[in-house]
Image (cartoon, rainbow, N blue to C red; front, side):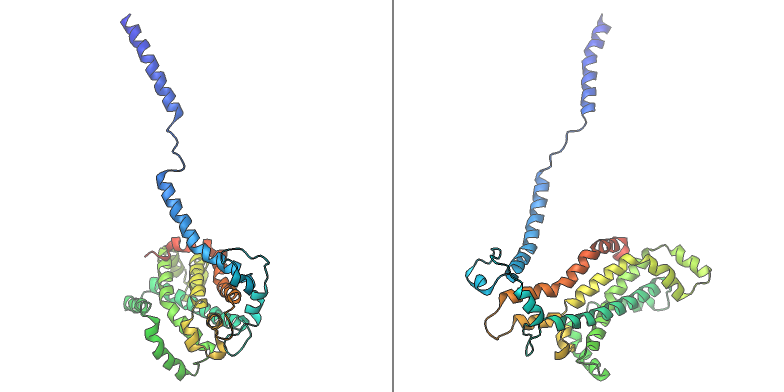
Length: 311
C-alpha cells in the first residue's frame, strides 16, 4: 500500500517535469533594455549623418526665392534641376564659368593612374616583403611604414622643389606622382598582411616547380587577392578623389581637380550665394566615392576580414 502511494505521488511530479521540458525555455522578448539602447544609438547616429544629406538634396532642388523665404527642412514645393545643370556646366570657379565638368575630368585623370600605379607597386612590395625576404627587409618595411605617419604638410615644400626640378610642377603629373608616393606605405602594409594570411605551401610548391618571382605573383598571388585589391582601390579612390591640398598646390590653375573647383564655387564672391547650386555641386563632387563604395562594399568587408589587418 505504501509503495503504491509512493508511485502515485511521484507520478504527477514526473509528468509536470515532462511538460516543462516539452515547453522549452521561455522566449526572450524582442524589446529588451539592451536592444532598446543599441537601436536608439544606431538610429540617432543614422539621423546625424543622413539629415545633412537630406537638407543638401532638398535644397539643391529648390529655387532661390523658396530657399530665402521657405523652411530649410521642408521638401521643395516645385522641384527643379536647374541648379544641378548650372553646377555642372556654367557655375563660376574663379575667372572661368564652366562648372564642375572640367574639374571632374581632371579628377579622373588624377585618380585612375594614381590608384593603379600605387596599388601595383604596393602589391609587389607586400609580396616581396613576405615571400622573398632579403637582408634588411624588416628595416625597409619599418622605414616605409614610418613614412605613412609623417603629416603631408611637412612634406609639401620638399615635394614642390622635387616636382619643380623634374619639370612637372603645375601639371597633373605632379599630383599623380605625389598621390602615388603617399599611397604606397599604407597599401604596402595591407598587401603584406594579406599575403601573409595565404597558405605558404602554395608559394613553396610553385618554387619547387620552377616558377620565378613574377610568374608566382601574376599566376598565384593576384588571382587570390581580389578582396584586398578592392580594399586598396576603395581607399585610394576615396582619398585621392576627396583630396584638396595636393590638388591646389601641385596641379596648377588650369588643372584643378573637382574638390578645388567646388571650393571656388562655394567661396565665390560674385553676387549673392546660390545655395542650391552649392548643394548640387557638393553632391556631384561626392558621387564617385559613394558609388564605388556601395558597388564594392561587400568585397571591402571581405578583404578586411580575410587578412588585411592581420599579421
